Image (tube, rainbow, N blue to C red; front, side):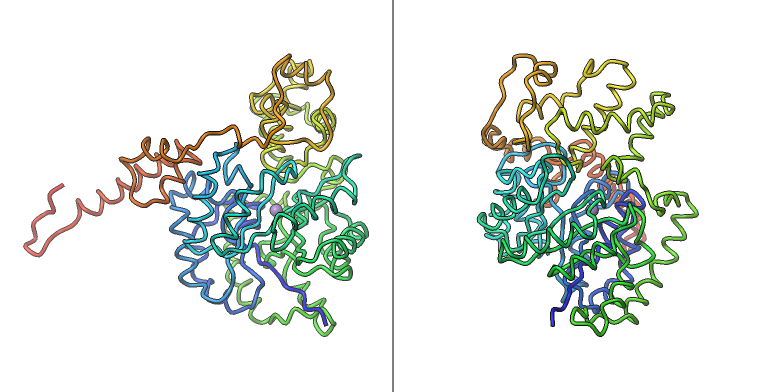
Length: 465
Ligand code: MN
């Protein structure tokens, strides 16, 4: 008997993948108690793009969301996604910011932190992973899965072993593009199970239409946990739906033990929410179909829509096919980075530049220059001298752990924003998204002012403002 456990992603990746991370806390609140009753392995509900999106688009404090969910979800483990040394931002932060962030995430209620690095450079996971363990959290290290001539089973086994040696409590195979095929999943998971002792979890997306088959083969290969989304927020660029997998495994040695009836209550809550987003066009029915481009170009679903919008801005939508073909070439030039945040954005932008400007690497974004200089970590294969020279000329390349060169930042950051500080966590919001956080802090102050100016005291005097 090998009970398969399920992480429910509806509060994080599902809405990040389908509706650009716009689900509001108030849309989650009414169903939290039911979610807590199901018996999931964990609820993924924080991190990834939710932090940025809460502050930027929803005028919500992500820390407040976390505390609110923790207060209601008393039994189920809360899980977040963290981009290693990039935290939830797009660049490397100093070690003091990374450890403070992890500390506060756990203090506010996170149990499991899934930590990944876009280059699978485990040195970029170390501080987040060790702090998670020190603070009593479960540190899950994630392998960014991709397909390339240099990414093979041996490489993944090597990375997994490094992660286990570093102290990872579990390992996740993170297939952000939904390109892991069922039979290869069987091979990879079987070998991982023979290589490391810690539990293995699989994360994939339905983008190319294979995900549920991939889970079934991974289950037969001995996987411990899989990521699913409740059906109204599943499929397409999101995760495989929870209910069919639960039904598939019922009465077998893999039975999840989850109640389809309780899951149905959850589905009923999210169905009108999905309809609302379909109506407002924030949920594009296109992302719910099967996207074969993901298989052909190994491009994650979110990246395809980004490319289209970048090309629209340049008035060059007719160059879409050409850009799609340029993406794998740029990737090859850059040492085959997995296309996950922030690499997917960086490679995509470079491909657009190369095609639209009619000359390759005529213009290079500063992030790509920094990447070629080694500031994001070690690439899977070395970048050729020709490409390196073209991009950074004779500038020096670093080989140490990138954050070793970043001096402590926390005190300066605190000084910069102290006039807005209402809770220690504000320092971290500002560290990650300075402008967006300031806008939010101002909004927060204005909200208070609004309440104060309407306040009427016992003597019916308007409260002085
Ligand atoms: Mn994902």
